[in-house]
Length: 315
Length: 239
Image (cartoon, rainbow over all chains, first blue to last red; front, side, top):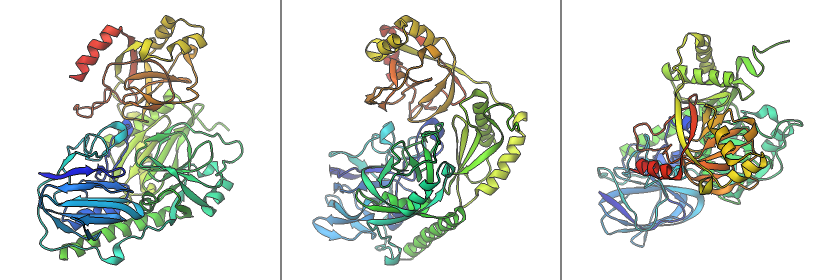
């Protein structure tokens, strides 16, 4: 079923799901959504399984002509949404019909919004995922960001019987001053003062911030004297904070598999969406946490999503 | 005190915490075939007999990244299961490496840096080709882009530094040299390696049953082809 025709594509709109796993050893990065909580909430709001493919919208939203009767939800960044020139709310489902014009505007807070439609977006699975990896020209819609004129299909539609709405206290805030928690390592032993600098300074998100990594600006994160500037290339994790030769940290995101620079700390999984929602000029401060704390926060996040699933199913 | 059986190969694996979903396991601190063989053996063992909660196992030069689901397991548990498997490493049969032959059309428009590489080593283009095609290169790891093989064993006479300014576009199939390494760009990407030729073979085909022709641990042998052969194979590969 033709779900949308793209009238204007917006800043950088791609089809994503939870990512492509099992191929990093072949140089294929995970890709997938950057803000998993917002993405999964969008799917639950329209009655999909939580990892059905959706749209990841960056800064400026697309303008879409609807081709089907369905339910849609837009979550993530605070963003204006107009359906036939009438504003509709985010984090809440709304019905659409063929011929409707859905206009998603520019973000007012945060960076990335997620759009889910009944049945999920239907593009072919490539190596087990529908996620777009533009660098490898695979997944999503022809391995690239959406363009005007693209026609996007959706899966089998099962309409909601009533509107679903996220409880206010479960909607994350996306401030422009962000505290993110991080665990020292894997190469924290290459640093001494550098660790104090990373945990005690404010860094600014530079304009070089994308799905591959967020380059930060701030005081130099110095290696211990005599430590090599690079290491033998090794696998990288999303959230790894890499310190390249210029000593300005880069938070790695989802489109890198290996790298030859030291990682001083690694951002914890539940705080990665906060990074993904940061825009150039925002301020980031790292807070030290432990592996045990990160794991219990991870469990709490799973429970929060499970609770949301139950709340929405009861609505 | 002597702590290693062999220079650069650790007697006991060293563990590093890579965030709340990653455990990095190091088997040595050098680029070396014996260290790399241990990494790949462990990766294979982990794949054949995978402990619960493991999402990915990624082998590289001298380390292995275990990506896990924190809802199911944690580094303490993983280290225990890893130690048991390490002790059994010698008993495990590792399949012999395959050698994959990659045809390359050297020089000309496909190898814009060939003249520089030849001149800087006082070699003729023919000598560069002969030296590049002689070894069977070990694939130490695959990464950077889908299917990009990092190959060890480049003849010392061909060691050439990276370009000072990387190219913003390196065409698919380009064969390059960076210091003591050689490799192939399976997809077009930016890159700073000295380009000496190009292969018409599709190294990454996501729609193929097996999207890749080789994996870490296999060997690659280059063979020189003419422009005509390049065109013929290229056409075949596109069908």
